[in-house]
Amino acid sequence: MTTYKTPLRYPGGKQRLWPFLDEILTANNLLGGHYVEPYAGGAGIAFELLLRKRVSHVHLNDSCIGVHAFWHSILNETENFCRKISRASLTVDEWKRQREVFKVRHVADRLDLGFAMFYLNRCNRSGILTGGVIGGLSQTGKWKIDARFPRNELITRIEAIAAKRASIKIRNWDAERFLIDYLPRLPVKTLVYCDPPYFHKADRLYPNHYKATDHARISKVIQTRVKLPWVVSYDSCPDVLAHYRERRAFQYMLQYNAARAYKGAEVFIFSDKVDLPPGSAIAAINDGLRAVA
Ligand SMILES: C[S@@+](CC[C@H](N)C(=O)[O-])C[C@H]1O[C@@H](n2cnc3c(N)ncnc32)[C@H](O)[C@@H]1O
Image 1 (cartoon, rainbow, N blue to C red):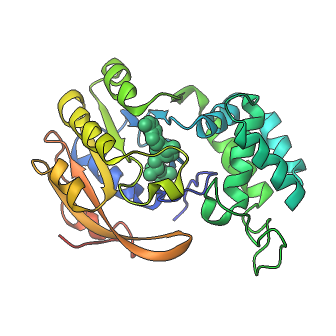
Image 2: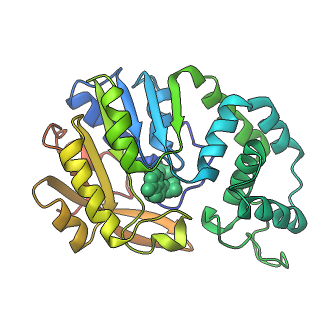
């Protein structure tokens, strides 16, 4: 099946779960409506749904200034961005330069920062921005710095997304503010998918992450302030299940790779407004996914 791949590699990326969100849209008569990700990251599901015309508009938000600079630049400076991809030098010296731009991200030029984020995402192990370069500084590993940088393919993905720019809104807010202030502006025919940073080990994966108290607070905001139908996903653990104990949830196994491949138990949680698709939809997501409860 064709996939409309996001240009970003994302630790914990959920792109392959898009058929499940599609089933939820269908079961809740939300096809053709708006779709929101307050923790967008690579936004793989959002672009699958938009480019397949399953939703008419997507609203993305991420508090990481580098992630925002990337999405903003590919939408508003598409040609310049793609030229940078064509001309990028894939060497350790250039990687060090891009790492410096990302380090001073709060004062960097937005296009330069968006590109630095992208470069590190594509050239670092597992796409971890603060991680090491593929192949190591000596480039003696089996895979080298350019292993995940297929220029033409990445340009094609970016151009496909940029062509839909009129249907895409991107914000750089804290999710709590976004949930409280932005969502009420949206039509009732909207689905909100929250994929917060993992409860465990997120500090290894993303520059922006939550402490346990933040997870508790945001769970209250989602459950009391969000009036639109919503879905949340998490790494499954007792604290998360406790925060959402009054909501329906199901756990599943998702194979992902961040530093090493392993199977993690994840959970989807649903607002009371969401009708669940029939059980078969869960099995259909793909082989890496299986309902365990
Ligand atoms: C699990 S990742 C999202 C992955 C995404 N669903 C995908 O498929 O690529 C979580 C994202 O939340 C962002 N984030 C962390 N804290 C945030 C906050 N307080 N407000 C908004 N975004 C935040 C991180 O920068 C990261 O991109």
